[in-house]
Image (cartoon, rainbow, N blue to C red):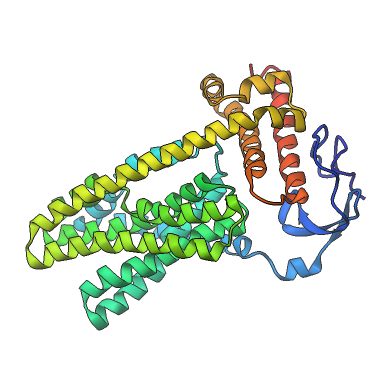
Length: 405
């Protein structure tokens, strides 16, 4: 039998002691704190070795789709690499120029994710979903609509609907994997999914533009003026999903208004481009671009306010976290304020920073847990507290051996 979570070690080698959590839950099947894809029997006092066969036969959607998405993403990368070798000059120009927006978007997504850094595997999962599943399904549907009803219908009606649905499903995949705890998480995952989608789409648009002699115009619009177009559209879905998780509201209702805003903004942008191209009315584009920039600036202000609110809430809950989970005075000093977190990170090497970020992320998730409205699941707290204990153990062990500070 595994030792109980309150002991100093478990058979998994995880240090989960010295955390003042709520009384243990009643016996039953719960998700394994060390492997979320498995259900393990908790006897009321300790974790046992019994795993649920039913859970094995019915794997979580987010888990079993990881490998197909990874394979699809790998196939995409290999195909693009091969295309660079054997393709025409236009395709090479499209692929190389399509990477330019990454230099702008990637730093912003990384900055948004500083408070509670998401695992690299989870971010890759989101990017690959956007680049493979969302891109493939949307391409098939949009091509069919264009064939049946014309390019304008595909751009203004089909693309906003199917593209936001498929990208939104990528955000919901993160919810199923229990990786979204609040509003900022939702926005971040929406950004990663949209980034994967946008990169592949930019490759195609810029390649076509190079062949038709419109490369400069398309590059300026897509890569210079609006590199955040897809992340901005899908951010509405991420915002809605994050609010639903944080406030424990019905996910379907929030997804409805989030999807509606995402599709509407996407349709408005595509419509302005289509109208200006079809009617030769350049003024429509001159009106649309400043409107898009204004919407982008409004989104930036909103995200900064959410970010600042998250910082303030984390600082407010720091004393509670310290008392409830037995943080040392040194840890309180290191993680007690956002400015102290930034100051400490600057002086760390990469491996040291990863350990430091793991503790900070665990504390941030616990802070979000205590900010939830309504009843809080004690099992979730046990799991989050266990993750904090594991991260603290690695961090403090490294510090003891002189690796940190």
